[in-house]
Length: 406
Image (tube, rainbow, N blue to C red; front, top):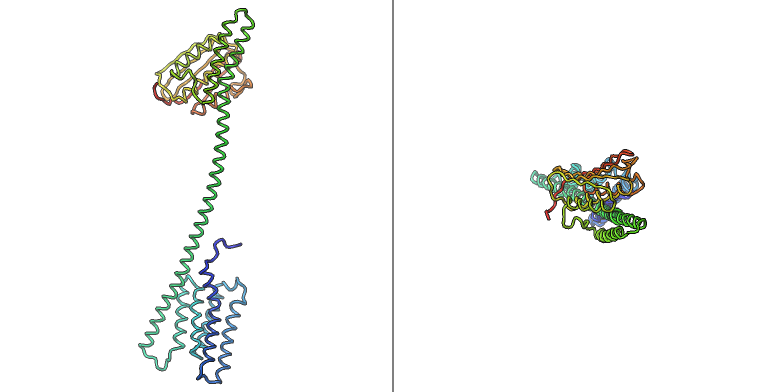
């Protein structure tokens, strides 16, 4: 699996340097030792032998091992100890190999971040200065001076290794946080686009349902009334009254169609509140159907929100249309009750009733479904009670959200 946050350029460069520095320092030390003019010739084979030992250790305990084995803490420790031991032997053999001993500072980074980093740096410093110090002429002051250098180097180099690792860890976490944030932003953008699409589709569906309700509650009912009056006109010689009513219904239907398209309230509510609009609706309905309709308003009348008034008016309009089309009633009643927290609308008739009052379309029409959708839109409910042959009662309940008085 690929690392999503690979080492930085600095990390990769330092790792490569730590791998090749021992070879470079060993070669430089050997060259410097062989170039020394006062070197006895008999020591050259020994120099080559010790250098070969150091090279064999470098190769045998690092690059020739599998990668998984090289990363183990035991392998790192053994490799470091061997490098430091061969560096000490070479340093005691020839001070020129003190350069090779410097590679221990680089290898100490393999222990970071831990206390062993300081131990590795301290060990390297001790070997470095221990092989170059002439112990036969060493004084306490000189030893203390070298110990002070060892302490300073240990703190400075070891702390530098650990600080570098900590900085890289923070940068790695920062890169991960940035990557996570970018992923989250992309996901949020996709989700936002999806929500916009869903909202657009929901808006289209709501608008279709609204137009379906408006057409059903206005145009369909108006056209039904026009057809009723025209059929009545065909059956009598004096058809003027029926034609006049048909003309009035056609004009009202045209007005309602325009208002539905513009999403405006019924014209009965333009200059009047709900009780007056209900009275006008009842009077027109009685004139059209010939069925006696009793209207009653109870409770303290308050101006309601336009949305509430339009909903109750449309529900009453639809319920009365159902009475006219399906009930075969001789009497009907409409009661509007203001009870404080809610407003109740009850419409009853003495008609034939319906078989399944709990269904949205007991007669295969759109009426009850339309009423329920309208009422749900303003937080209201609808209940229908009916017994075949004993009439139907439709009850609508809405919250009494008040509006501005006209």
